[in-house]
Length: 263
Ligand code: 13P
Image (cartoon, rainbow, N blue to C red; front, side, top):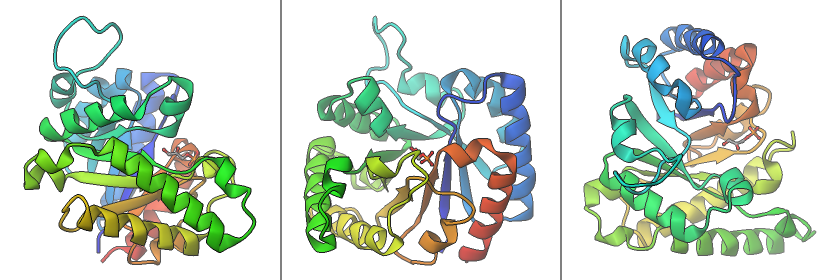
């Protein structure tokens, strides 16, 4: 199975010239390793500058780190689905925990974004994951139970009304399981626990949301040293990579490893 790797550049790099260099480097690696599916999510301001680089070939797709739910109106600072469509964007990340935490995004807002982005025809990467509070539970079984409960509630709120969208549209939904305590800490979740959580999420997506073949990624301190520990599981469809995606050597090594784990 082809693994999907999404590089979330977050708020970097600091200039378009550097963004172009980083992307070109990614492209060279990807052309040599055709197996995985690679998505780059740069800051909005670089999307149009990078779309011409990406459109010359189809191995790398562009993604946005967020999207607004309205297509027009007085919404200072927001970026509409229509604008992203015109910038050759195929994927959008919605509900990243950093936006939930630093920008006060609520599940209600995230739900509107998910529905608007699916309707606009994007592949939507919805981020969910439990906070550090759950990590304090020492017993693994109880901790997993609490984490699953948290994620189930989050999915219920973020996916409200998704049943009403067309089947084909619903199936463009991808979930990224990113436990908040694993993001940017250098300490990823235990791969076996991730596998269990992803199985749980997939079951929910099939049973409660009638998705056909749900895709679920893992994110949180993924790098070239640990990515194979996750990709070896068939249930884990890929990774959402943050910090490591701004380091060329890391990107090169990650893409090589992805290639080995994709068939
Ligand atoms: P890190 O890989 O830096 O932990 O970030 C993960 C993430 O938030 C990807 O969206």
